[in-house]
Image 1 (cartoon, rainbow, N blue to C red):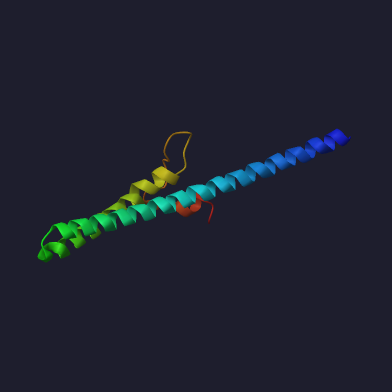
Image 2: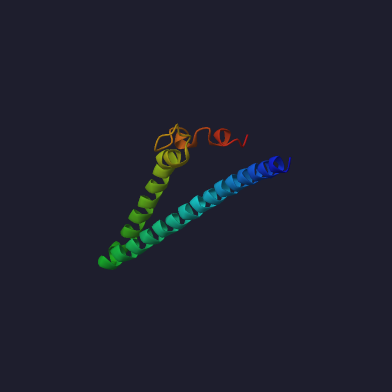
Length: 112
């Protein structure tokens, strides 16, 4: 009787630990994505300053607008391709295969 109670309690603790571990891993994944995003934006800003310093002052506005366009294209590519490959539903493969251009993003996450 005592052994059964201990085994049941141990099983419940294992389930709770697995749930906490998955939440912890999700939190770490989110923090890494935010850190990587911040580093990429700082990289773009630094490269913009480098390019602007390497040209004549009358061409600086063109360099700044070009780099802003690069950021916009990168954002659109992430919207169409990057997000579904990173976070789409997978079938045991390397990348996701659903939600391109965020189609059905809310329904697939259970928000609706």
